[in-house]
Amino acid sequence: MKVLIADSISATAVAELDKNFEVVEQHYSPDELLAEISKYDAVIVRSATKIPREVIEAGANLKVIGRAGVGVDNIDVNAATENGIYVVNSPRASTISVAEMTIALILALGRRVVQASIKTKRGEWPKKEFMGLELFGKKLGFVGCGRIGSEVAVRAIAFGMKPLIYDPYLPPELFLKFGAEEITDLSELVKRSDFITIHALLNEETRGMISHREFELMKPTAYLVNCARGGIVDEDALYDALKEGKLAGAALDVFTVEPAKESKLFELENVYVSPHVAASTKEAQERAGIITAEQIRLVLTGAEPEFCVNARDLKQS
Image 1 (spheres, rainbow, N blue to C red):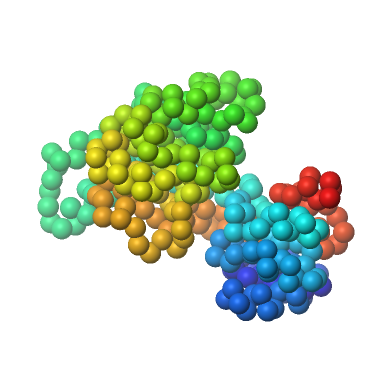
Image 2 (cartoon, rainbow, N blue to C red):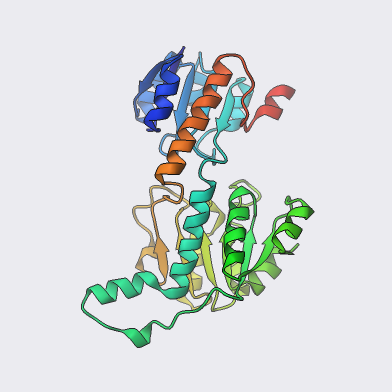
């Protein structure tokens, strides 16, 4: 059987797949992928390669699509299910890395680390300009609190922050575990939080859920951090809110359209940005590759994968 690795994964993961399958490491353009996909039994992607319906329907031999990461919004999961194709991922691989990046951005915003570094390197010494704030005692609002959010909560509590969690799907016992306050209304969460961090999946329910109305309700001293998915935040509304002083700052690792080569948000000093790298640590990428490779191996050898995003729908179809 033949496995296409369309976006690079760890050498260890490639070596594991090589033991059982013919492996091709090749990043194709969209047109090339459409033309070549019929040759493969499996394909592994990260975030660069998109697997739309037309590619899936052209994949005559395709049995499984692997995402070396968590989010599968670059894969048409419905089309895969309709064609009896497994979609597998590695949900635990980047949990710690993304949680640590989230905390890093919260700290950086509170102490204005980027601006202080830039001005000091210019030969300035604007000590009085950089009065920061402590995290201790601040309310950290969570929009969603799954695996990554849970790890952020643990670290935030260690700083003495008070977690407020808005997550309709979180089991009640987890609120107790973190000593967190359960918030059942998003409006209340954004009103009360000093920092807001997003840890939700991107879907029709969450797309654009942080927009003009939510920014109107936020404290002008509040900060927003998004290391989840860009489409959850209305970027035009965020720009307006920051320009009008309706919140103090924001840090974005993700954007509605990626790669984000241009954005009016880039003009603003109180916005920190990075190119979707929260999961980009050596440790996380190694785990993501190995876990995904194992899911591919299981499917191609007739076993059930552990991490399959469309398993229930496949069984019902």
